[in-house]
Length: 408
Image (cartoon, rainbow, N blue to C red; front, side, top):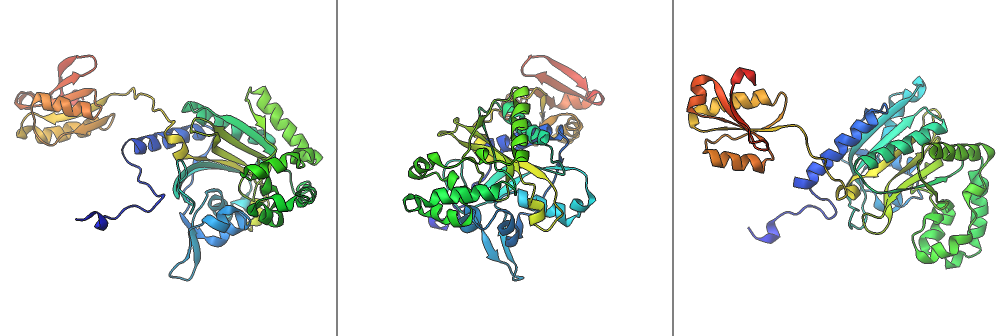
Protein backbone atom coordinates (compact mmCIF):
# COMPACT_ATOMS: atom_id res chain seq x y z
CA UNK A 1 0.00 0.00 0.00
CA UNK A 2 1.37 3.42 -0.95
CA UNK A 3 1.97 6.08 1.70
CA UNK A 4 -0.76 8.20 0.08
CA UNK A 5 -3.37 5.54 1.00
CA UNK A 6 -2.42 5.35 4.69
CA UNK A 7 -4.94 7.30 6.77
CA UNK A 8 -3.27 9.63 9.27
CA UNK A 9 -4.77 11.12 12.42
CA UNK A 10 -6.09 14.67 12.11
CA UNK A 11 -3.62 17.48 12.74
CA UNK A 12 -3.35 18.32 16.42
CA UNK A 13 -5.12 15.08 17.47
CA UNK A 14 -2.62 12.55 18.76
CA UNK A 15 -2.75 8.96 19.97
CA UNK A 16 -1.99 8.24 23.61
CA UNK A 17 0.09 5.05 23.49
CA UNK A 18 3.00 3.30 25.16
CA UNK A 19 4.82 5.45 27.72
CA UNK A 20 2.46 8.42 27.28
CA UNK A 21 -0.62 6.31 28.00
CA UNK A 22 1.05 4.93 31.16
CA UNK A 23 1.86 8.46 32.34
CA UNK A 24 -1.67 9.64 31.47
CA UNK A 25 -3.40 6.93 33.52
CA UNK A 26 -0.83 7.32 36.32
CA UNK A 27 -1.56 11.07 36.48
CA UNK A 28 -5.37 10.72 36.40
CA UNK A 29 -5.48 7.88 38.95
CA UNK A 30 -3.27 9.67 41.48
CA UNK A 31 -4.87 13.10 40.99
CA UNK A 32 -8.25 11.40 41.53
CA UNK A 33 -7.01 9.82 44.79
CA UNK A 34 -5.96 13.23 46.09
CA UNK A 35 -9.24 15.02 45.30
CA UNK A 36 -11.32 12.13 46.68
CA UNK A 37 -9.61 12.77 50.01
CA UNK A 38 -11.11 16.27 49.83
CA UNK A 39 -14.62 14.86 49.33
CA UNK A 40 -14.89 15.00 45.52
CA UNK A 41 -16.89 12.49 43.45
CA UNK A 42 -16.39 11.62 39.77
CA UNK A 43 -18.71 13.02 37.08
CA UNK A 44 -18.78 12.20 33.36
CA UNK A 45 -20.51 14.67 31.02
CA UNK A 46 -21.07 14.33 27.23
CA UNK A 47 -18.30 15.34 24.84
CA UNK A 48 -20.96 16.80 22.50
CA UNK A 49 -23.14 19.64 23.83
CA UNK A 50 -25.38 22.38 22.44
CA UNK A 51 -23.34 25.31 21.14
CA UNK A 52 -25.52 27.73 23.10
CA UNK A 53 -24.19 26.27 26.35
CA UNK A 54 -20.69 27.58 25.64
CA UNK A 55 -21.83 30.85 24.06
CA UNK A 56 -23.72 31.69 27.23
CA UNK A 57 -21.10 30.46 29.70
CA UNK A 58 -17.68 30.93 28.11
CA UNK A 59 -18.88 34.16 26.49
CA UNK A 60 -19.34 35.53 22.98
CA UNK A 61 -16.24 37.70 23.42
CA UNK A 62 -13.85 34.81 24.17
CA UNK A 63 -11.39 33.45 21.62
CA UNK A 64 -12.81 29.98 22.26
CA UNK A 65 -16.29 30.91 21.00
CA UNK A 66 -15.10 33.32 18.30
CA UNK A 67 -12.33 31.24 16.74
CA UNK A 68 -11.79 27.81 18.21
CA UNK A 69 -14.96 25.73 18.60
CA UNK A 70 -15.60 22.55 16.60
CA UNK A 71 -19.18 23.56 15.78
CA UNK A 72 -21.63 21.95 13.31
CA UNK A 73 -25.29 21.21 12.61
CA UNK A 74 -26.15 17.55 13.29
CA UNK A 75 -28.66 15.37 11.44
CA UNK A 76 -31.44 16.56 13.75
CA UNK A 77 -30.72 20.21 12.80
CA UNK A 78 -29.24 20.86 16.25
CA UNK A 79 -26.41 23.40 16.57
CA UNK A 80 -23.82 21.40 18.51
CA UNK A 81 -20.10 21.46 19.26
CA UNK A 82 -17.37 19.34 20.81
CA UNK A 83 -16.77 20.65 24.32
CA UNK A 84 -13.90 23.19 24.44
CA UNK A 85 -13.74 23.13 28.26
CA UNK A 86 -15.23 21.19 31.15
CA UNK A 87 -16.93 23.59 33.56
CA UNK A 88 -19.97 24.53 31.44
CA UNK A 89 -21.04 20.89 30.97
CA UNK A 90 -20.76 20.17 34.69
CA UNK A 91 -22.85 23.27 35.48
CA UNK A 92 -25.42 22.23 32.89
CA UNK A 93 -25.69 18.82 34.58
CA UNK A 94 -25.99 20.47 38.01
CA UNK A 95 -28.96 22.57 36.81
CA UNK A 96 -30.57 19.85 34.66
CA UNK A 97 -30.68 17.50 37.66
CA UNK A 98 -32.26 20.28 39.78
CA UNK A 99 -29.38 20.24 42.27
CA UNK A 100 -29.43 24.04 42.30
CA UNK A 101 -32.92 23.79 43.84
CA UNK A 102 -32.01 21.03 46.27
CA UNK A 103 -29.42 23.18 48.04
CA UNK A 104 -26.42 21.80 49.86
CA UNK A 105 -22.88 21.29 48.59
CA UNK A 106 -21.75 19.31 45.55
CA UNK A 107 -18.10 18.53 44.74
CA UNK A 108 -17.23 16.86 41.44
CA UNK A 109 -14.05 16.01 39.55
CA UNK A 110 -13.64 14.92 35.94
CA UNK A 111 -11.03 14.19 33.31
CA UNK A 112 -11.32 13.71 29.58
CA UNK A 113 -10.85 15.21 26.10
CA UNK A 114 -11.58 18.82 25.12
CA UNK A 115 -11.45 20.27 21.60
CA UNK A 116 -10.28 23.64 20.28
CA UNK A 117 -9.39 24.49 16.69
CA UNK A 118 -6.14 26.34 17.23
CA UNK A 119 -2.61 26.17 15.86
CA UNK A 120 -1.02 22.95 17.17
CA UNK A 121 2.29 23.37 19.01
CA UNK A 122 4.16 21.78 21.89
CA UNK A 123 1.77 21.32 24.78
CA UNK A 124 -1.16 22.77 22.79
CA UNK A 125 -3.29 20.37 20.73
CA UNK A 126 -6.68 20.47 19.03
CA UNK A 127 -7.77 17.48 21.07
CA UNK A 128 -6.33 17.75 24.56
CA UNK A 129 -7.19 16.43 28.00
CA UNK A 130 -8.05 18.23 31.20
CA UNK A 131 -8.37 17.15 34.81
CA UNK A 132 -10.78 19.48 36.59
CA UNK A 133 -12.84 19.98 39.73
CA UNK A 134 -15.98 22.01 40.43
CA UNK A 135 -17.55 22.96 43.79
CA UNK A 136 -21.13 24.22 44.10
CA UNK A 137 -22.80 25.72 47.16
CA UNK A 138 -19.83 27.15 49.11
CA UNK A 139 -19.31 30.92 49.08
CA UNK A 140 -16.65 31.01 51.79
CA UNK A 141 -13.21 32.25 50.76
CA UNK A 142 -11.82 29.36 52.82
CA UNK A 143 -12.96 27.08 49.98
CA UNK A 144 -11.01 29.25 47.51
CA UNK A 145 -7.89 28.62 49.60
CA UNK A 146 -8.80 24.94 49.93
CA UNK A 147 -9.02 24.53 46.13
CA UNK A 148 -5.69 26.31 45.58
CA UNK A 149 -3.96 24.14 48.21
CA UNK A 150 -5.48 20.98 46.71
CA UNK A 151 -4.16 21.89 43.25
CA UNK A 152 -0.75 22.56 44.79
CA UNK A 153 -0.85 19.15 46.46
CA UNK A 154 -1.47 17.46 43.09
CA UNK A 155 1.47 19.22 41.44
CA UNK A 156 3.69 18.59 44.46
CA UNK A 157 2.84 14.87 44.33
CA UNK A 158 4.20 14.71 40.79
CA UNK A 159 7.17 16.94 41.76
CA UNK A 160 6.23 19.57 39.15
CA UNK A 161 7.81 22.96 39.91
CA UNK A 162 5.39 25.88 39.80
CA UNK A 163 4.51 29.38 40.95
CA UNK A 164 1.05 30.52 42.00
CA UNK A 165 -0.36 33.75 40.54
CA UNK A 166 -3.36 35.33 42.22
CA UNK A 167 -5.86 38.09 41.46
CA UNK A 168 -9.39 39.21 42.26
CA UNK A 169 -11.83 40.04 39.48
CA UNK A 170 -14.37 41.78 41.70
CA UNK A 171 -18.13 41.21 41.60
CA UNK A 172 -21.26 42.67 39.97
CA UNK A 173 -20.94 45.70 42.28
CA UNK A 174 -17.33 46.73 41.64
CA UNK A 175 -16.60 45.28 38.20
CA UNK A 176 -18.92 47.58 36.12
CA UNK A 177 -17.44 50.89 37.40
CA UNK A 178 -13.94 49.42 37.03
CA UNK A 179 -14.71 48.48 33.41
CA UNK A 180 -15.82 52.06 32.69
CA UNK A 181 -12.59 53.41 34.15
CA UNK A 182 -10.55 50.89 32.15
CA UNK A 183 -12.36 51.65 28.89
CA UNK A 184 -11.71 55.36 29.34
CA UNK A 185 -8.01 54.63 29.86
CA UNK A 186 -7.79 52.23 26.87
CA UNK A 187 -9.54 54.66 24.52
CA UNK A 188 -6.79 57.22 25.17
CA UNK A 189 -4.36 55.08 23.11
CA UNK A 190 -6.83 52.85 21.27
CA UNK A 191 -5.16 53.31 17.88
CA UNK A 192 -1.89 51.88 19.19
CA UNK A 193 -3.45 48.64 20.45
CA UNK A 194 -3.68 45.46 18.33
CA UNK A 195 -6.84 44.50 16.42
CA UNK A 196 -7.93 41.90 19.03
CA UNK A 197 -7.57 44.44 21.85
CA UNK A 198 -9.75 46.94 19.97
CA UNK A 199 -12.47 44.31 19.61
CA UNK A 200 -12.24 43.44 23.29
CA UNK A 201 -12.69 47.07 24.35
CA UNK A 202 -16.22 46.76 22.94
CA UNK A 203 -17.00 43.22 24.14
CA UNK A 204 -15.02 42.48 27.33
CA UNK A 205 -12.43 45.16 28.13
CA UNK A 206 -10.70 43.33 31.00
CA UNK A 207 -9.53 40.74 28.44
CA UNK A 208 -7.27 43.45 27.00
CA UNK A 209 -5.11 43.09 30.13
CA UNK A 210 -4.42 39.48 29.09
CA UNK A 211 -3.07 40.39 25.63
CA UNK A 212 0.20 38.60 24.82
CA UNK A 213 1.39 41.17 22.25
CA UNK A 214 4.48 42.87 23.70
CA UNK A 215 3.58 46.33 22.39
CA UNK A 216 0.16 46.13 24.05
CA UNK A 217 1.68 44.92 27.33
CA UNK A 218 3.99 47.97 27.38
CA UNK A 219 1.05 50.30 26.76
CA UNK A 220 -0.93 48.64 29.57
CA UNK A 221 1.64 49.20 32.32
CA UNK A 222 -0.21 52.21 33.73
CA UNK A 223 -3.73 50.78 33.28
CA UNK A 224 -5.97 50.96 36.39
CA UNK A 225 -5.84 47.76 38.49
CA UNK A 226 -8.95 45.89 39.55
CA UNK A 227 -7.38 45.24 42.97
CA UNK A 228 -7.36 49.03 43.57
CA UNK A 229 -11.05 49.23 42.69
CA UNK A 230 -12.62 46.39 44.67
CA UNK A 231 -15.73 46.95 46.79
CA UNK A 232 -15.35 46.41 50.55
CA UNK A 233 -16.76 42.85 50.37
CA UNK A 234 -14.41 41.73 47.56
CA UNK A 235 -11.46 43.46 49.18
CA UNK A 236 -12.16 41.74 52.52
CA UNK A 237 -12.37 38.34 50.79
CA UNK A 238 -9.16 38.92 48.85
CA UNK A 239 -7.26 39.99 51.95
CA UNK A 240 -8.63 36.97 53.84
CA UNK A 241 -7.55 34.63 51.03
CA UNK A 242 -4.00 35.97 51.21
CA UNK A 243 -4.06 35.63 55.00
CA UNK A 244 -5.11 31.95 54.79
CA UNK A 245 -2.43 31.14 52.21
CA UNK A 246 0.19 32.97 54.28
CA UNK A 247 -0.84 31.07 57.40
CA UNK A 248 -0.44 27.78 55.52
CA UNK A 249 2.95 28.90 54.15
CA UNK A 250 1.73 28.81 50.53
CA UNK A 251 3.85 31.13 48.38
CA UNK A 252 2.11 33.21 45.70
CA UNK A 253 2.46 36.42 43.74
CA UNK A 254 -0.22 38.97 42.84
CA UNK A 255 -0.72 39.37 39.10
CA UNK A 256 -3.19 42.21 38.50
CA UNK A 257 -3.29 41.37 34.76
CA UNK A 258 -4.52 37.84 35.45
CA UNK A 259 -8.09 37.81 34.15
CA UNK A 260 -8.56 34.19 32.95
CA UNK A 261 -9.67 33.46 29.39
CA UNK A 262 -13.35 32.83 30.13
CA UNK A 263 -16.08 35.36 30.85
CA UNK A 264 -17.76 33.62 33.77
CA UNK A 265 -15.12 34.25 36.46
CA UNK A 266 -15.60 36.69 39.37
CA UNK A 267 -13.68 37.38 42.57
CA UNK A 268 -10.80 34.89 43.03
CA UNK A 269 -8.76 34.00 39.94
CA UNK A 270 -5.55 31.98 39.99
CA UNK A 271 -3.03 30.34 37.69
CA UNK A 272 -0.21 27.89 38.31
CA UNK A 273 2.70 28.61 35.96
CA UNK A 274 5.89 26.66 35.34
CA UNK A 275 9.12 27.31 33.52
CA UNK A 276 9.91 23.59 33.33
CA UNK A 277 8.18 23.28 29.93
CA UNK A 278 10.14 26.02 28.18
CA UNK A 279 9.01 29.63 28.50
CA UNK A 280 6.98 30.25 31.65
CA UNK A 281 3.41 29.24 30.88
CA UNK A 282 0.19 28.25 32.61
CA UNK A 283 -0.19 24.57 33.46
CA UNK A 284 -3.38 24.94 35.51
CA UNK A 285 -5.82 27.60 36.55
CA UNK A 286 -9.26 28.43 37.80
CA UNK A 287 -11.29 30.66 40.03
CA UNK A 288 -14.69 31.57 41.36
CA UNK A 289 -17.81 31.84 39.17
CA UNK A 290 -20.68 32.70 41.52
CA UNK A 291 -23.03 33.92 38.75
CA UNK A 292 -22.53 31.20 36.13
CA UNK A 293 -25.32 28.92 37.40
CA UNK A 294 -27.72 31.88 37.23
CA UNK A 295 -26.49 32.82 33.71
CA UNK A 296 -27.40 29.29 32.55
CA UNK A 297 -30.92 29.40 33.97
CA UNK A 298 -30.39 27.95 37.44
CA UNK A 299 -30.84 29.40 40.89
CA UNK A 300 -28.04 31.66 42.04
CA UNK A 301 -25.41 29.31 43.51
CA UNK A 302 -21.75 29.99 44.32
CA UNK A 303 -19.19 27.98 42.38
CA UNK A 304 -15.43 27.56 42.13
CA UNK A 305 -13.10 25.18 40.30
CA UNK A 306 -9.92 24.60 38.33
CA UNK A 307 -8.62 22.68 35.33
CA UNK A 308 -5.21 21.16 34.61
CA UNK A 309 -3.93 20.73 31.05
CA UNK A 310 -2.69 17.13 31.21
CA UNK A 311 -0.60 17.04 28.00
CA UNK A 312 1.43 20.01 29.19
CA UNK A 313 2.46 18.06 32.26
CA UNK A 314 3.10 14.55 30.94
CA UNK A 315 6.77 15.09 30.12
CA UNK A 316 7.31 16.38 33.68
CA UNK A 317 5.50 13.50 35.41
CA UNK A 318 7.87 10.92 36.90
CA UNK A 319 6.21 7.65 37.86
CA UNK A 320 7.08 6.39 41.31
CA UNK A 321 8.49 2.88 41.31
CA UNK A 322 5.80 0.29 41.85
CA UNK A 323 6.43 -1.50 45.12
CA UNK A 324 4.00 -4.37 44.61
CA UNK A 325 5.10 -7.65 43.08
CA UNK A 326 4.36 -8.24 39.40
CA UNK A 327 3.96 -11.87 38.36
CA UNK A 328 4.71 -13.74 35.15
CA UNK A 329 3.22 -17.22 34.60
CA UNK A 330 4.42 -19.58 31.86
CA UNK A 331 4.35 -23.22 30.74
CA UNK A 332 7.34 -25.48 30.17
CA UNK A 333 5.24 -27.85 28.01
CA UNK A 334 1.91 -27.82 26.15
CA UNK A 335 0.19 -30.03 28.76
CA UNK A 336 0.72 -27.34 31.43
CA UNK A 337 -1.16 -24.55 29.61
CA UNK A 338 -4.54 -25.15 31.29
CA UNK A 339 -2.87 -25.05 34.71
CA UNK A 340 -1.00 -21.86 33.69
CA UNK A 341 -4.31 -20.10 32.93
CA UNK A 342 -5.78 -21.29 36.24
CA UNK A 343 -2.75 -20.10 38.24
CA UNK A 344 -2.62 -16.74 36.42
CA UNK A 345 -6.27 -16.09 37.25
CA UNK A 346 -5.61 -16.94 40.89
CA UNK A 347 -2.75 -14.41 41.10
CA UNK A 348 -4.73 -11.68 39.32
CA UNK A 349 -7.02 -11.50 42.33
CA UNK A 350 -4.17 -9.89 44.29
CA UNK A 351 -1.42 -8.83 41.87
CA UNK A 352 -0.74 -7.60 38.35
CA UNK A 353 -0.04 -10.78 36.38
CA UNK A 354 1.18 -11.53 32.85
CA UNK A 355 0.62 -14.91 31.22
CA UNK A 356 2.41 -16.55 28.26
CA UNK A 357 0.25 -18.93 26.20
CA UNK A 358 3.11 -20.65 24.36
CA UNK A 359 5.28 -23.26 26.06
CA UNK A 360 8.91 -22.18 26.18
CA UNK A 361 12.23 -22.97 27.81
CA UNK A 362 13.42 -21.47 31.12
CA UNK A 363 15.61 -18.79 29.59
CA UNK A 364 12.98 -17.49 27.17
CA UNK A 365 10.38 -17.22 29.96
CA UNK A 366 12.72 -15.13 32.11
CA UNK A 367 13.50 -12.84 29.15
CA UNK A 368 9.79 -12.26 28.55
CA UNK A 369 9.19 -11.70 32.27
CA UNK A 370 11.81 -8.95 32.41
CA UNK A 371 10.35 -7.31 29.29
CA UNK A 372 7.02 -7.05 31.15
CA UNK A 373 8.74 -5.67 34.29
CA UNK A 374 7.67 -8.77 36.26
CA UNK A 375 9.81 -9.56 39.29
CA UNK A 376 8.31 -12.96 40.20
CA UNK A 377 8.27 -15.81 37.67
CA UNK A 378 5.97 -18.83 38.04
CA UNK A 379 6.65 -21.79 35.72
CA UNK A 380 4.76 -25.07 35.38
CA UNK A 381 6.14 -28.21 33.75
CA UNK A 382 5.70 -32.00 33.94
CA UNK A 383 6.92 -32.35 37.54
CA UNK A 384 4.75 -29.45 38.76
CA UNK A 385 1.64 -30.98 37.14
CA UNK A 386 2.25 -34.31 38.91
CA UNK A 387 2.63 -32.66 42.34
CA UNK A 388 0.08 -29.82 41.85
CA UNK A 389 2.86 -27.29 42.52
CA UNK A 390 4.53 -24.40 40.71
CA UNK A 391 8.15 -23.36 40.39
CA UNK A 392 8.55 -19.76 41.64
CA UNK A 393 11.54 -17.42 41.48
CA UNK A 394 11.94 -13.82 42.60
CA UNK A 395 14.23 -12.18 40.01
CA UNK A 396 15.34 -9.43 42.42
CA UNK A 397 16.18 -11.55 45.47
CA UNK A 398 17.12 -14.72 43.47
CA UNK A 399 15.00 -16.75 45.92
CA UNK A 400 13.44 -19.85 44.28
CA UNK A 401 11.08 -22.48 45.64
CA UNK A 402 8.29 -24.93 44.89
CA UNK A 403 4.84 -23.83 46.09
CA UNK A 404 1.56 -25.78 46.29
CA UNK A 405 -1.11 -24.31 43.94
CA UNK A 406 -3.62 -24.00 46.81
CA UNK A 407 -1.09 -21.82 48.69
CA UNK A 408 -1.22 -19.24 45.89
